[in-house]
Image (cartoon, rainbow, N blue to C red; front, side, top):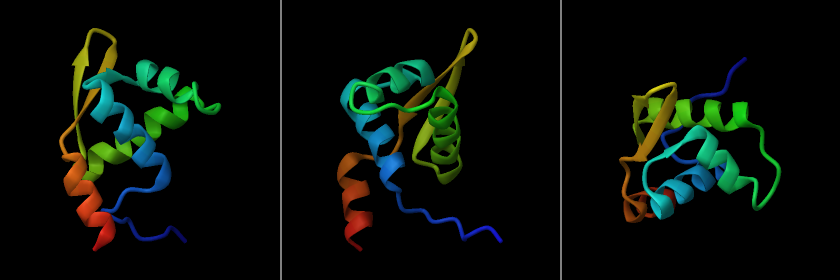
Length: 85
């Protein structure tokens, strides 16, 4: 049985949001490259997490050529406030 979807950010989602907050709009490839500087992460995992963030309303997605570029919609301070609530 699947668990309930939460609007709060998971640890992995927070890492992706950190990249977007620091670097601005990024493709999945750019996000994965940045995250791989810290620890190994698969491109498909980043892609899936970006789609989840899109579904949760934390990011906006725009197709540029063949790449999907994600941009943070949620402000960093707002995400912190939600986590503390």
